[in-house]
Image (tube, rainbow, N blue to C red; front, side, top):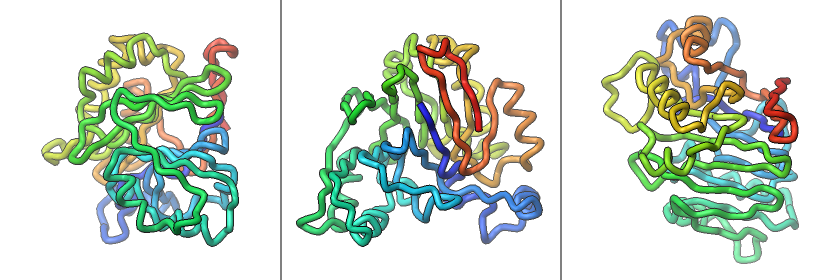
Length: 270
């Protein structure tokens, strides 16, 4: 399975354009811009419909399924569906998400658009071409699902944003999954009194430990922190703190190639 991170930032990106904090200043100094989080799987499956265009001219022409976690605008930006119409794509596109996601997308579609809207709820599953998609419970302010994706080579991905502490049904569903790749949010860094259903540098390692406890994260799992906001420390400090918990950062535009079950769980990075 080949996973390209189109964005790794929180809703406001990082740096936040209105902010002059040390983390934002460091990001600007190093020309490090993080877009709202989304990912492209094997060129055909898009995780979240983030606002803006992908980095480095990465094309979405091959996408046949869009999996949207929830209706907040950094994850569900249906204006992008209008861009697809302007490109006159004739292929069928399937947009999957909770009911509020479909309601947000529907006004942006013309009657003859080749787009199907498919509702999914926690516990549901869907075969999307060669990929098996399972929807897991998220803990967020609006109806939200997390996505468990198995590729044609047996590689398995957990896309876990936006969410607070993982609900027990999610841990049960992930029992023994031994994911090859986990993309898990870490929004608020050292701000732990945010009062939102997101993770921070105190809760992120606790959730990783819970996933390890049920065999969802193993010694072979590549854990990448996403949905990163400017309340985190500057990059080099954050890298060290995540590494202490067996996780890492990647830049927007990074492609991660997992070997899947046939590759003995090996993971390569580009």
